[in-house]
Image (cartoon, rainbow, N blue to C red):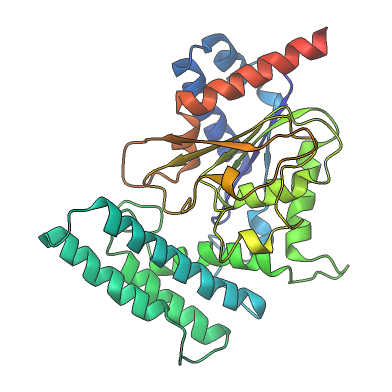
Amino acid sequence: MVPRLVFVHGIGGLRDTEGELATWTRSLADGMRAAGHAALAERLTTLDAGRCSFAYYADLFSPPEAQGGGEARAEGDASGILEDLLVELVAALTSEHSASEAPHGRAWQHRERILAHARAEADTSGQAQGSLSVLRRALNVATTLMALKPWGGVARWATPKLMVRDLAQVSRYLARGEKDASGLTLDSRIRHRVHAALGDAPTVVVAHSLGTVVALEALHDQRAVIPLLVTLGSPLSMRTVVRPRLFPQPPRTPERVERWLNFWDRDDIIAVRPLLERDVLPNASGVLPRSSRIDSDGIWVHSAGKYLAQAAVAGPVAEALLSAARRSAS
């Protein structure tokens, strides 16, 4: 019997959980076939489909009546974190631009003008504070950045408002606020969803984007063995915004994780510091994340589906599932 597999999604609006689970599973199965695990890929999408689950929490960012995931929100501490996030993303894009493109060409100069404008808009010195001011500034930065690939065109975000809404989810999670009637903060309620999906059996965990932050924190409270943790397009090592706000500090591999593989794409704008092993301490067993670069086609490479369809990603997941199945059978 194949052990359980849990997917943890990242930023974004409301979604159909059954459809999303099917999409992620199909993408992973495609990657498994490319990695030479066709039999397991077939089982994963047919016989063992019930052993895959999707830890869903996007609805917690929006009121029940919201359509399409609601408006951008960033209040209190979350507004300051959103500002820092925008500054760090623009700085990362600027650094990438300087390192990867031949200077002084027409395309380089066009990109430099856009990034200089975005840097000026993201600069908070001498500017009005407050959540509305932050959101207006964030929308200005987002509007400017959408003139760049891979932010504009056929990228994920159709409008600056959607970009800010999604990025604000990161700040809202890390702000540790928005208590409900029982006193649970937003981030606690999100982790509870992950714990419910994990259960108390050995589980392979595949997390994407903000989901890598959620999964890392949730797994510190996990009692069952995690044979493999896979993180995709992770912002965990963003040193201004994410890393210093992780629980616990300093960041370390959860004790029950036996292996941790981290994958990043060179063109993934969220994984701005992709080598997680430089910023995470090992657990008692010496487990550290091992980061590997992959290369996907297209403009928007941050997609979970593009990562999962890679043989380099799906192959180790298949091997971990098969190995865990053999252990449970012996």
